[in-house]
Length: 539
Image (cartoon, rainbow, N blue to C red; front, side, top):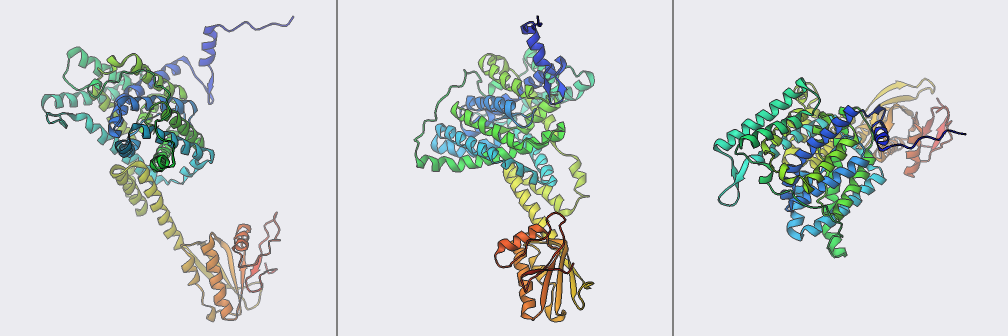
């Protein structure tokens, strides 16, 4: 009689779950503790940021907290990079403020749904792969600019309500006490790993500083001074807007901009976290996860979100490298809203500011300062340009500006490399061969045409493209312009060593006839006679 396996007990099933593989490593109980505590640390730091971003967008604090919970949970479960943290962000909030002011919060929810649909389409069509086109100098500028933005954002925590109804800078004993607690938090984060790694350093710092403030009743601002975070579960509701073309005209521009900003920030965070964890890929998966998260969030009263680089850095440096840490952060945040709001509101803002200041120190690429003097001037300028635009505008604009500037610099440099070396032909008596070197494209087309003087050349001229590459239609037009010059002079021009893709370009142009019957297996070099429109046999 065959042996039947004994049924799993609840304890056995829990051990099986803990022992499941994550990548190639097994999750031990110690790692499980680290992941959960990292999630708790992130959740504590998420609260004031989500509330602050909700204020920026002009919506209720719970709208920001719900977004942080839902976007964080869905992207943690299905995103492209374990360890990443997503939620409501300032980059999105500054775009939302005009929409909410002009049309109300329901239009914001509809916009977030449409934003998610656009991101889903980007994931389906694998548009996330284009993030690989971001050059390294742009990444350095992005990281540095982000560190400065995070630092400047913490300055708001040093303001208090004024008698006139606005806010004013702290002064007197409250300012000095706050600064002392910030420095104390940073010192604890620095010392803790040297003493023990049993608990994430940021969590230890928050706990110690909060305990001191509560025990000695130190008069500083706490989370509760921002707003109450108490609430219930988010409820499903279709956005209360007219389903008309007029509504689409209002929300589509905002949705498109938000989707672009969200994806750029998320995919750059993906790369940054990947460089720290040794992981690659996942751009399309992350786009799909961000899109799904925002669609769901819009239907549950959240303001939408994307990856948060600062929180992701806290998580990774606290030991959170798996999906569990992001899931734990989202669930802890929901627990704060439902059950522990009164306790979380007692946490001093100074402790959270200290944590973020350490994130700033760890995020800023300090080596880039020394690199500025060693790299080409154009790369140094890109780093400074992206850093400045990130601080002055937003992250997405900075990255787009940096990529465009880098592309222009590359085009300019590549255009200057086109040249031709003349030599007598070894196979055809009296013919002159021009060996073309450098890429032939729109940037170098003009210089290419100026290389040749048909009146000074013999009856037969051969252009050898072994050291070059015909890239685009501008290159084809340049070849035709050179051919016209030789034809007008009554001379014969041949093209040699064109690659199969160049043959295809010439054929697609429709103006030059190309015989494509060259050997597809051995890539036999061929001559193309531009006057007769036939391939020659002179190799």
